[in-house]
Image (cartoon, rainbow, N blue to C red):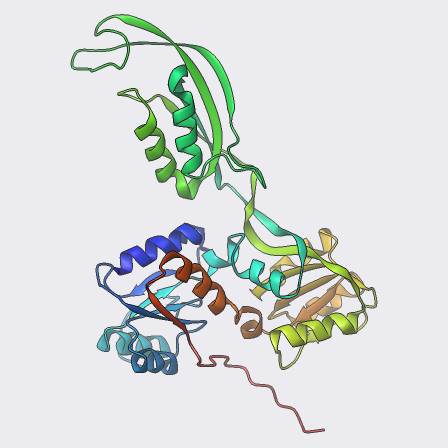
Length: 368
């Protein structure tokens, strides 16, 4: 399989166009046309991980965190990112990172966390705007069903838990075919009227190419008349964090024990003055403190994330329980998520999850 095929498959599951501006997801090292046969999945790229890949004869490493964020002006091996780049190139290792694009898709990192602690009725906490577009296409009535279904199969027409959504109006279209045209109906240089359906539907902008191609291929006209409109609606299938409910309320201590057990964390930082039982839980893998106000506004009893600053524990007070479980701990199961997603797409592609613990944070405890 070529690297480009692997990238296409990942893009279908977590479109790279959804990554944040500061991010650097995608192919970091390697040739898209290179043939690969075995991949190693990791949370972070370290020298030990690259050594593990070589020992296991892997030719591509797929990580959550990219090891190159800022532009490199030189590659001398001085900085950690430079060392990793040199080592990967010398040993013909390709590197792909799937970071904030995997954080923001509905079935991504936060969905995995929700599943681990048993949340139900899960929704995106902070939906993204500006991702939805509307397609309007005009089609002869006898071909509307074929065109509509082609658009749906390409991914358009999804609203929440519903799909194949469209609005349709019948009317009369007019056109005159010019010299050199090959009209489906009507004659060259003659004004023609045709009974047509106006089909309206929505789609996320990152699948626009697939939707338009499907529409054109299914449409009988030589020149397809269609309009594209940007929408300001929130897209509830993409965004930051998630929120859901536990099956039954839990006291704070029991909830913290659940987190400790599921995430095997060395320590949980929390605001000790919160005494309300926990039922509604918001969460965000990695550094999610920017979502604290959203979690409070959404009525969450607890917010599970990492890298929370000191003063935010004061701000939370009795409003919400903050549970900072650690960055690595909150994203460690991303490796399993990537394995599940990619192995379903490529049954015969050899994949393995890295056994290297890349957590740079250690916890000191005096023996009791």
